[in-house]
Length: 197
Image (cartoon, rainbow, N blue to C red; front, side, top):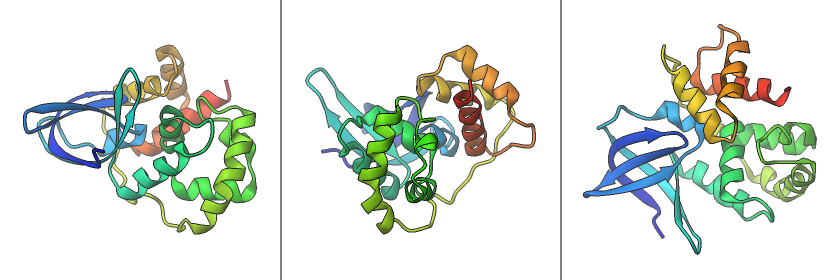
């Protein structure tokens, strides 16, 4: 299994990036909020990874912390939750938020995640209940990056990577308050707008 990659960031194509490690380019899928924590193209980058082997493909999923990767691994152990849905969950909610949702048994919040219907949301609540007790109240990653002009295209790309159409993504972004400047908050606000459509 490939558990960690350290190399140069070559390309960003949401929800994937290309990381060059000793001359080999690894395509890695990442959570939407991680897009805004990435260094500039050509910079060094370390990702904690999880490899999913399928009959037709080997898929790499990358995370900026081992805690985020561990959460991903816990999610994909749940029946019916594949890696893409797990990535959508992590892109939408922090571990702390998931813990609060599970403790409040809020099915409606979970159904706002792309690919999660009511039945799966109910299953998630049951399966994650024992895990939520063990989670710390600290967020998975306290580092927040600031939204910069021109990053709307990255947010649109991240939303498209989560399964939304470009028109939907742009429409949702146009409804987000100008007061929202943090990239992660911008994605979350856009997802809330999309869930109300």
